[in-house]
Amino acid sequence: MRIRIALLAGTLLAAGGDPKYWDPVIADVVLEDARIGEAFVVRHALEVFEPEDDFPQVRLQNSDGTEVLELLQHYGAERYSFGQFRVLRPSLSDAKAGKKGAPASFVSGKGVRLGLAVDELVGLLGVGDRDTRGGQLTLRYSCSSKEACPGLSRVNMPSYEATYNFQNGKLVAFEAGYPYP
View 1 (cartoon, rainbow, N blue to C red):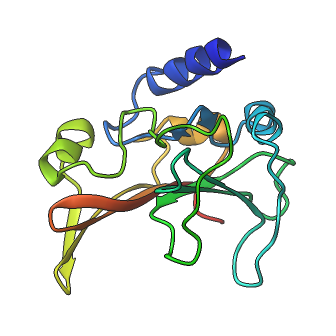
View 2: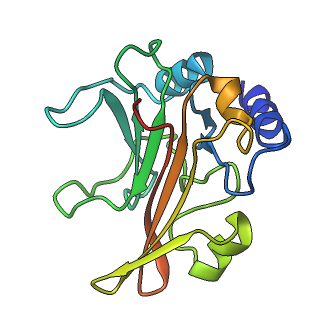
View 3: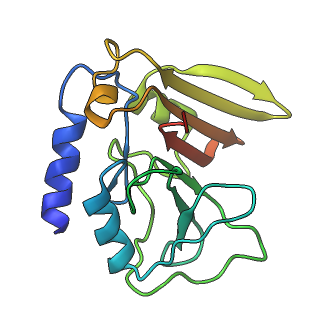
């Protein structure tokens, strides 16, 4: 199954025409692909839950408990068809060793992972819109044109957005996907 996922992810990313920053793959999960989403949930024995202030989601910590992956499912979407993902550091109260078999790190299809330097991310995805507040740098990428982002037509979504947060020059959190319409 992992080989099929890797091939599908490679095909999706190389489908052509999408901007350099287009990156809808995380830890072998292709956003808006219910079969791959279900395989990931089953492989890691995850439970879908719904917080009061967010979409239904699954959470997985990496093998040493230093990263958290959240996969969000939009209302009305097919079961296990995740529309957005977040990768972040766990809060101190949530930090614990991950499940056996969990990935060592959550890496996107383009190679984005926590700890990257700003210039490394720009090398992978290109220059995004910059915002600096309180000593934190945020790079944002977005597309809402199906001509500029043909992938939007492939997944039947109106837009794609990605946000990368840096502290002290290192990536500490990132999220990407298709915002809820």
